[in-house]
Each structure stands twice: as structure tokens, then as C-alpha cells.
Image 1 (cartoon, rainbow, N blue to C red):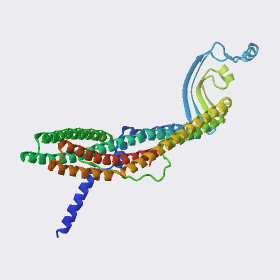
Image 2 (cartoon, helix red, strand yellow):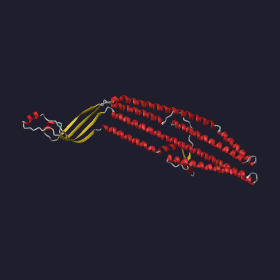
Image 3 (tube, rainbow, N blue to C red):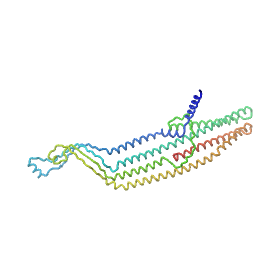
Image 4 (cartoon, helix red, strand yellow):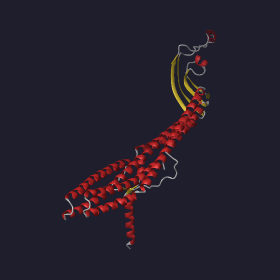
Length: 427
């Protein structure tokens, strides 16, 4: 009967323990999602949608409404001899009035724009991809800052742990010295020396805890999550097998090249003729029938419709230079990409060498710590036997502490170096 409750309790305990931890990957994800720059992705989507909508609307009929009134110093009229002949028939011809007016509307519709709208859509999508790739680079840099904070906290908290261990050893030896002092086998100065070292170590612990709190506060600002009471888990120490970089900078270079290709399509479209339909109607004076308007000055409705073909020949003049500028721009981007890959490969090689160096150094850490511990225990026994004084013991305690601290430092430094390599490669 009690087994289900025991299993439930164990499950809750396990969940509580797991929830009291946070990993590096979680911190990086939280920081990137919390970074204000993340909101620009939505703004880029909205900007692209608006621009594509404007390009698509270029195919809608274009309507223009206008009103116009003019006065002229000269207007068309019949020759005097012809006007005299007509006037003999009893018909008066005054000619066009100097005061003219009209209210009308015009409509035009593209039939073929030479591929301009298609090229503009392609260019806008390419420009959006380039802007997004540039944003990816800025957001990727957050990962490096978060990792530096994370490993900084691990290192400081490991230092604090070693200091606490040192405190325990000093306290135990201080208790022994006070007992020996009461028995007359140790001097007051020995106890004072160990106590002073204990207090000095306590100061170092205060500084380490303060630094850890400060680093955690900065990391909390990045992640937007409280890290109080959470243990930072040491990340995996696996070295990437694939050493080919996959950085956002590479995608940005490719996006820039594709944007240049889209601009080349716009150059081609600018050299094509345009074909469209148009219609215009207006109410006013004079109408299209000038003879009628010369004889009768009443306003009239007038309609005009047709097909319009236009061709900007001037685009051919700059075509060659415009394409040459695009090729030069693409060549420059290719050079920047090659420089980036070259520097990345150099950094990768250097980081791998550093990792191998740390691994070689770490092979001796365990033996050094073991030897320093044995020497310290022997010194404690010698102090109890009156062979050495507190100064010699403190030296041995400091050596052991430094050996343990070096071992922990090398372990965390190795992890950080591996993750710096992962950052360089984006793995």
C-alpha cells in the first residue's frame, strides 16, 4: 500500500532536484529569446510584407482624377476668308474661347512591365534575407557573452568550494593547536598564525561569493530568469567531430551575393519596353471636336482610349557600368568571405592546440593533488609531534589548496575552450 506513495515521493524529489539546475544551453536559449533584438525579426517580416504588397499593387489599375482651368492668348480659329464665306450663310464662327476648362479622369493598366515587378519581388526577398542574416550575426554574439558569464560563474564557485574546504582544514588544525596549547605542547603564536590564515581565507570567500552573485545578476539580466538557488551544470566536454564552420556570417555573405543577383535582374528589367492600356474621359470645353467647339462653346463629354508602348533607351547607356559595379561588389564579398574562413580556420587550429595542451596538463593533476594531500597529512602529524611549526603546516595547506584549485581550474578551462571552439564552428 505504501509503495505507490514512496514512488510518488521519489518522483517529486527527483523533479525538484532537476528543477534546481540550469544548463548552459538553456541559458543561451533564454538569453537569445530575451534579447531585445529578437523583436526585429517580426519587424523585418512586417516590412517585407508591406513592400511586397506595394510591388503587387503596381499591377492594379492606376486611376487619376483631375480638374483644370486655363486661359490662352491665342486659340485656333478659321481663316478670315473662310470665316467670311461661312458667315454669309448666316452661321457665326467665333473660334475657340481663350478660357478653357475640364474635369476628368484617367485610367491606365499595365499589360507587361518588362519583368520589373518580378525583379522587384525577387530583390526585396533577397534584401530581406540579407537583413535577417545580418540580424542573426548580432544575435549569435549573445551566445559568446552568455558562455563567458556561465564559465566565469563555474570558476568562481569552484574557487569558493575550495576555499570552504581550506577553511575546514584550517579549523580542524586550529582546534588541534588549541588543545596542544592547553597541554603545553604548542605555542600561542602557532594558533594565532593558523587563526589569522583562517580569517584571511574567510575574506577571500566573501570576495568570491560576492563576485559569483554579481556574475549571476548579469546572467539573470541576459536570460530574464532568476538563478537564485539554481546550480549551474557543467556542460558536456565532447569535442566536435566536424570541424567545418557553419557560422551565420557565412550565410550573410551568401545572402549578399544573392541580393546582387537579384539587382542584376532589375537591371535587365529596366531595359525592357513597357506595354499598357489607358483610357481618359473628361467633361469640359473644348472637346476633341475643335470645329464643333469653335461654333458652339458648350461643354461636352470626351473619351480617349488606346494602347501605350514605352521604352527607356537610356537604360542601355548605364547597363554595362551597373553590371560591372555588381560584379565588383560580389568579388569584394567573396574576398571578405574567404578572409573570414581563413581566420576561422586559424582560430580553430589554435583552439584545438590549446585543448590538447590542457588535456596533457590535466593528466598530472590527480597525481599532484594526491601528493600534496599526503604531504599535508604528514605535516599535520609532524606538527602534532612537534617536528614542525605552524608556518610549515600553512605552507603545505596552501600547496594542497593551490593544487586542487589548479585541477578544478584546468577542468573548467578545458570545458570553456571546447565551447569556444564550438562557438567558432557554430556546433
